[in-house]
Amino acid sequence: MAAMTAPILHTRGLSRSFGGVRAVDDVDFQLEEGEIRAIIGPNGAGKTTFVSLICGRIASDAGEVSLEGQDISRLPAHKRVRLGLGYTFQITSIFPNLTLLENVALAVQSQARSSSILNLSSRRLNDGAHEALARVGLGERSGELAGNLAYGHQRLLEVAMGIALKPRVLILDEPTQGLSESETLGFITLIRQIAERTTILLIEHNMDVVMALAERITVMDQGRILAEGTPAAIRANTDVQRAYLGEQP
Ligand SMILES: Nc1ncnc2c1ncn2[C@@H]1O[C@H](COP(=O)(O)OP(=O)(O)OP(=O)(O)O)[C@@H](O)[C@H]1O
Image (cartoon, rainbow, N blue to C red; front, side, top):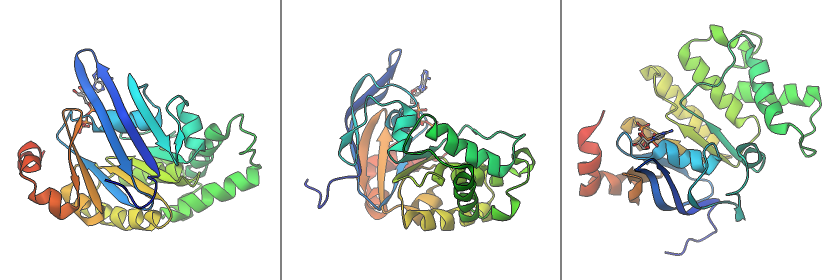
């Protein structure tokens, strides 16, 4: 089916196996600019592997990834970040002995390394880091050590690291995992705010979060896309109910 505009991100035939397991199997996927998309699916469906292939954190066996029409399949992860692909992953990547500000500045700097485009002065670097921290509600705490933050706030810090480079597409892998109910509600509000400027691709197990945020849902199962559609359509899809909704973790 033809889309109204070219997708901001798309994959074609994307595949990756581990031994005999086809973790991601020939996946064609399109993400439209400005949307909030959730990827759901049972444990082991291939969700994390799929977004890792998009980000370049792991190499694909076959297939293509394009961002804004540009084939980025052969680029290393840091170059994809520079082109506008931001992400935060389940595994925490913060440095506990650095301040919040230093963590965000470091995230920006590590991507800017050896890039003439991003030859940032330390003041601009700090301003950008401060802005990102303020957007996630941690602006007042920028001088504190990251290791002293409660778990939920560490997740927010990771989001600040993800948005500091002002990505065009932000990928979040299970961002609400381990958050309290009230932190999760705050997170939903934050994602809505970020989505005003950024296209969001979200792996999420919490169906309340998915239903509150996603405009469209992609369901993965056994390395493939099982279904795609609006929350209402996905809820009504019997294949999905069998594969996933009926057996929530
Ligand atoms: N580094 C790896 N080495 C070997 N097998 C892997 C590796 N990473 C993923 N797999 C396998 O690939 C399949 C897909 O895993 P993946 O983590 O992408 O699924 P997922 O949908 O993100 O699962 P979850 O919801 O539990 O995070 C699983 O069978 C998993 O065991």
